[in-house]
Length: 235
Image (cartoon, rainbow, N blue to C red; front, side, top):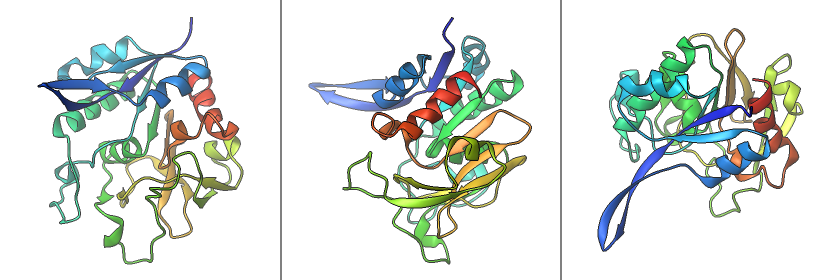
């Protein structure tokens, strides 16, 4: 049986005469997981108390990108640079993370997903890269094509990520927040030249996070598809 992958979904409105609420995930995640041999299921934003039942029906959890993480979750006040939030999504995904950890199921976290995973484990975020004291690279590459890598990262030796990627690697980039204080049990496995954290994992739990977007490049870059392959079959 194919591994069942739960993708934590997002939600938004669509107006076509009437206003409709949509539960969705970017198709790129579906195709990347399907190409890897997984069976994707979109988990719509719902009640946190239902998260254990959702996780009981899938084998692994993927946390996707999206809105900023509510700073109240890491005991911070909102800064002027903070962008759109989805508080119900935050709380539902935190419940999914807790259920996945309780049930011993792997988590692959992408962009916002990596940031939220860090917060779930007691870490904090920088609400906007402009608030860092260090000079910062361009981490939102728009309008450069999504699949095109735009800046380098250094992969830590003796890490899980290093078994999948070379020590020096190029990634795409679409984010304005970053990890500040690292969550409990997590280690940094990839950094940009400006010190921004680009990868995390846990040596004792099956957790893997990347700040870039492999789903946007996996069709053309073999190593990006390889992250999905590993997640589906080995993580």
